Amino acid sequence: MLNELELTGRARTHVVQRDDLKAALQPDTLAAFLAMKADAARAGFDIEIVSAFRDFAAQQRIWDMKFRGERPLYDAQGNVRDHAELGPAELVEAIACWSAVPGASRHHWGTEIDVIDRAAVPQDYRVRLLPQETEPGGVFHPLHCWLDGHMFRYGFYRPYRTYRGGVFPEPWHLSYAPVSLRALESLTPEVFAEALATSSVLGREILLARIDAIYRRYVVNVDAPDGIAPAARA
Image 1 (tube, helix red, strand yellow):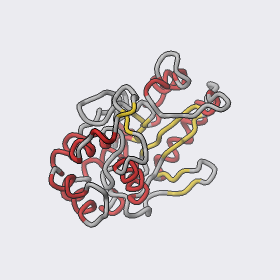
Image 2 (cartoon, rainbow, N blue to C red):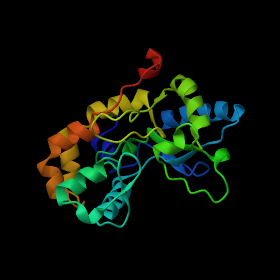
Image 3 (tube, rainbow, N blue to C red):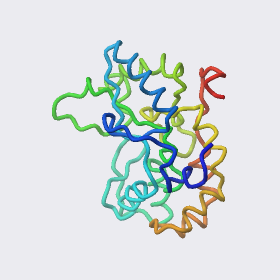
């Protein structure tokens, strides 16, 4: 069970650093990933983690840069939105569709991985982590077909598989259900709000004023795991 500091990315006592993977993960998640990676390699895929554990400060850097207009904002189709046309409340919503509010990111838990197939990346190709890359004709479509049939065996699922009115679909984002399901139950609006209130996150006042709505729309509004054996959920 993760404590409140671990849940909100303000501690890293629950993760182990793997320099060979360039990632930190919760130990059970790490073991499951290594098993899945080995099996995928036998099928010709080189699963690489491009994002795993991310602490509060790292998540805040992403959020603040988008709030200031220093990083692009995308719509659901991957088109760039005009930062200048968005008011403060609209800006918060636009960012939250792709990037979690600091303190509420699932990446704080060490159970979440964003993955690509390194073997499929053409020379000079810039990975964007957009849905088009995972769809038919996309560079990572073969990997995602393999994941569709195998990831559940290792306890992984896609929490952002479909659009539910909150976060846009992120097929590359895999979650280790045996730990993440319990973490989500433990991350209450009160825990989230406390982490945010003691921070310097840009737009904090807007976020705190709408904390319950943000929590319902962007934190707990996720897909449930399908096909994961009961033992893997325990």
